[in-house]
Amino acid sequence: MSAAGDVEAAAVQAISGDEDVVRVRQLVRTAAVAAKLSLVDQTKLVTAASELARNTLVYGGGGKAEVSHLDNGARRGIRIVFSDSGPGIPDVELALTDGYTSGGGLGLGLSGARRLVDEFELETAVGVGTTVSVTKWAR
Amino acid sequence: MALNAEQSERLNVLLTDRAEEISARWAEVAAAPLRGRLTVAEAARQTLDLQRQLQATLRAGATDVASDRSAELRAVLSEFSRGRARQGFTATETATTVLALKTAIYDVAGVEKGDEATLRDYVAWTSFIDELSLFTFESYTKARERIITEQNEQLLELSTPVVKLWEGVVSVPLVGTLDSARAQVVMERLLQALIDTGSPWAIIDITGVPAVDTQVAQHVLKTVMAARLMGAECIVSGIRPQIAQTIVALGIEFGDIVTKASLADALRHAIKMSGSELARSQRRAA
Ligand SMILES: Nc1ncnc2c1ncn2[C@@H]1O[C@H](COP(=O)(O)OP(=O)(O)O)[C@@H](O)[C@H]1O
Ligand SMILES: [Mg+2]
Image (cartoon, rainbow over all chains, first blue to last red):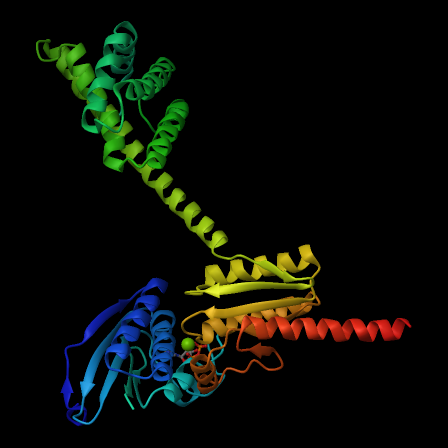
């Protein structure tokens, strides 16, 4: 957190249905515009958020997304933390492999989201839950 | 709470002997809180229907709402609830109309000045009417849900126009959020249009989709595969630069599916391809 400098209070969106995935996207879009991210970066961040929110819903059994504004003095950015108390991910490397899916998806959400953002952290414990934090900085 | 046979019989007698007074008072009490939205005459038509069916049901020996003998009565109450739901009345307003029968009976039967036996009957009857009103409340809720589902389906249909752009070319625009229900409708309608028009080309235009994530991509890929099985080829159009970069970073591969920046480009491509196919087949025929 200290590297990030100022962190503005987070907006929280519960994720318990399809319509919440849409709400997360809208929340992130608004935040990204406010942080003056370029159109490409906005789209990348919104798409990453869409993937992670859906994973939180589908695999994590629901949870929440917290969106906060960062300012490290030189640049502004957006951090989004997705968390659930679901089954956790037993093999993180496998889950981050392009094309791996346990649920009939394209298996590109997690690995793709990592490529779409500047910082990506994944914490997970089987039976406890999963937290994915992503950050995108304005250029 | 169910009525006993005598209570049911006595309610029937009251409703029959004092039919006109009760229905007049019932309609009046029912219409009072709905003033301006429902006239006393309209309320009277509804309460009269309910009253007639209630009498018939009691005559048949019904003592509670759930029994087989009350099937007709339940149907009439459901119909009444559905009508009210369509007209935009609330569940409470709808159930209150049924509850108004209590006041009508209280006034007409003279419960206030009546003896103890009348009072006992009245208590039993009112709990029976409570049941009727609860049933009405539940039917209303179900009807309301059905109306909302219908409206959503209509909206889906409306917002998915498949148009014939050119001889042999149909197109469908994807707009907004492509959830699974919508994606399914889009796919079905596009495939149907391919059959109806015998078109060999379909253009899926994603200009209106703000974020193409893997779920949207998967729906598009499935639609393209289904169209291919029917002998038609799809072009995906409306891929703006930011979407293209995002798709690449995500790692989505459209394989040999033709993608174009705009709908016009896609149409040009389809016409050119059909033209050269036509030329080829003409050469073969010659
Ligand atoms: N929040 C989560 N909780 C548990 N498992 C998850 C979570 N997110 C992802 N996974 C696992 O990682 C796999 C890969 O995820 P992803 O790349 O998004 O692909 P997809 O969603 O298409 O399956 C999932 O199939 C699932 O097994
Ligand atoms: Mg996923």
